[in-house]
Each structure stands twice: as structure tokens, then as C-alpha cells.
Amino acid sequence: MKIDILTLFPEAFAPLKTSILGRAEKDEILKFNIVNIRDFSKDKHKKCDDYPFGGSAGMLMMVQPLYDAIKSVYKRGSKIIFPSPIGQKFSVPVAQKLSKCKHLIFVCGHYEGVDERIFELFPIQQISIGDYVLTGGELPAMVIIDTVARFIDGVISKDSLTSESFSNGLLEEPQYTRPQEFMGLKVPDVLISGNHAEVEKWRKEKRLERTKALRKDLLNTK
Ligand code: 4G4
Image (cartoon, rainbow, N blue to C red):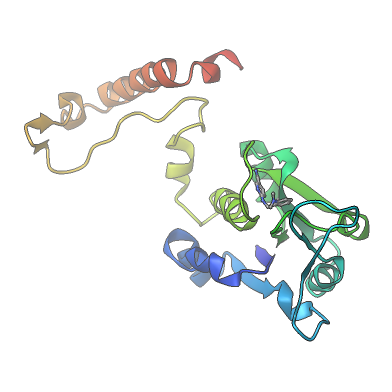
């Protein structure tokens, strides 16, 4: 999957070069292209924001640099995502659908938002990661990219995808690694027993117990 990221703050995307997403890019499963919207300003000071007509607090991103930046990467079949507090609520099904796309374009808003005309010039899907306001669309873009990437074959092992929280509608069970005892705290005996059937039974019980204790809502709605 090719992912173009249009932003006034390219440095914000350094985390994509590390860890699992960095590995996926080296493996040529993902290709990131970070585009500085400022490079498309026609102003001698590279200005990309201006005052809102009608008057109100703060600044808006100007439509022209945004339009030219999108035009520079947009092809037939590209999907344009705009992280926004008014967008469709992000979820696992939304992420799974996006993970099937060949080309995603993320447009990151900043200041008080963007000139509304950009939504008439391109088909743009607005997505919200939750009911709170952030200073820019950069963090939500990274949240969406990370979530989507994990549904693409080869990014993480198939095993981890199906065993983790939410994949079966339940929270994940507690997990332990070496040593078997730390500060007097022991790993549950069943996990050392070698009895695979008992281990699976214990895990299932713990998933249910945890979900009941922490997320009753996950049990009711299904
Ligand atoms: C668009 C309009 C997304 C984008 C205004 C983006 C929260 C989310 C932004 C803004 C965002 C979310 C600056 C208010 C960028 N904040 N919940 N901020 N603002 O997904």
C-alpha cells in the first residue's frame, strides 16, 4: 500500500520510520511519502494560513496550497482521508475496509481547520478517532495508519491479529514471560503445566472475566 501524507509538519511523522511500520516499509509492504503542503504555497513567504471570512478565532488553512498538494499525488482510485472532529467515527471495520486500498492520501488539518471548498474539489472521507479536539490531524493520521497497517498481510504475524483484544469481541487475557518468579510474584501454574487444553480453558475464562470487569458494553452489544 502506498500512503501519501500531506502536512505542514512533516517532522511529526518520524515515528513511522521506526518499529513495526519501519520494518513494513523496508519489506516493501508499505510505502510512505510525506509531502510538505508549504512547498505548494505561491506566496513569497510560503504562507498557507489566513483569517476566516466573517471573522472568528484563529486561522484556516488556505485552499490553494492544499488543492495543489492533493493534485500532485491524486490518481483514479486514490482514497483521501481527512482526520477531523466532525468525521465518521473510526473503528475496526473502517480500518479493515481501508486496509484493502492500494493508495491512501492523508490530509492533515491544523489551526482551526481548512477552507471548506476543498471538500467540493476532491472526494474526501472525514474520519474522527474520538470525541476530542487535537491541535492537528497528524496524530489521528498516525493512529489510523497504524491501525490499518496491522490488517495488511505481512505487517504483523497472523497469530497476533486473531489472538489480541477485540478480535473475538473480548479483551485479551493476562500474559507473562520469564522469569517464572519476580519479587515473590509467580506466573500462574497452569501456564507452566504444558497442558495445552487447560491453558486454552484458562485463557478463555480470563478473557470473559476481564471483559465483564472492565468492558461490560462489549458483552451486551452483539
Ligand atoms: C479539521 C478541523 C481530528 C482538523 C479542525 C483532527 C481531532 C480529530 C483539525 C481541526 C483534529 C479527531 C484543529 C480542531 C485537526 N482533532 N477527533 N484536529 N482542529 O479525530
